[in-house]
Image (cartoon, rainbow, N blue to C red; front, side, top):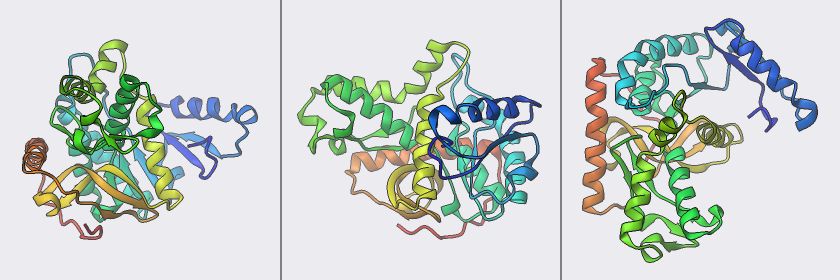
Amino acid sequence: MVERGYADIVLIDIIEGLPQGKALDILESAPILNFDTHIIGTNSYQETANSDVVIITSGTGRKPGMTRDELLLTNVKIITEVTHNVVNHSPNGIIIVVTNPVDAMTHLAIHSSHFPRNRVFGLSGVLDSTRFSSFIATELNVSVKDVSVCVLGQHGKNMVVIPRLSTVGGTPITKLLPQETIDKLVERTINGGAEIVNLLKTGSAFYAPSAAVARMVDAVILDKKEVLPCATYLQGEYGIKDTVISVPVKLGKSGIERIIELELTDEEKQALTTSAEAVQELVKTMKLSKPNIKHTARG
């Protein structure tokens, strides 16, 4: 986002020196990459005051063998504290949640912030979609620009990948690839994060997630009205209530400006419901009172 040049950036972390060092390292690339973005690192939320967009990445990362769900209780306290600080210093901002398990953490951020649901959403679908797209493009040896996919639901094992709505140059992949291959690509997409965690051993994916978040911020800051799949609080859309899962939404300067409801088959609807129920179980574990969510984003 620094390289895009349309917004000033503040990096914040509780570890003294870490955000300052990261910011300085990035700043020193400006003469080479030719950007004039102002970027600083800080340990104080005061320097983030009146931010238009806040991206929450705080929390414990995944380790080999660890599921996103196991991160839940560890990250609840962190996200609650961070969200309260964000609200106190940027009451009119938009919050994008990255911390896993992202559907539950987005729900928690909405609950803790009391922001309308259009101003709090999470990274999931954009990242999941780009993984599926890259796997399809590699399999068919085509440009990723020609690939369009449909991935909904929970960010994790209950992800809902819909091959019939995933296309290459307008042709459904169900007509281009055998079912066995499609199943393998879907399975790899669902386990995309775990595959990288297992390879790295001491870290998790960061490059593709950062690119996905940057695309979401582009849509908001530049008011692009782009339709992207995001972790979104549903209040009846798709027959699902009081639950955050990934669905396509129109993103603009006010955040989620519209929730797009796709026509799904009965089987796909059931899969999405099952996905939502998995998220609901995580939310129950957090033992939150029912938030008063404002109805701003319409389907």
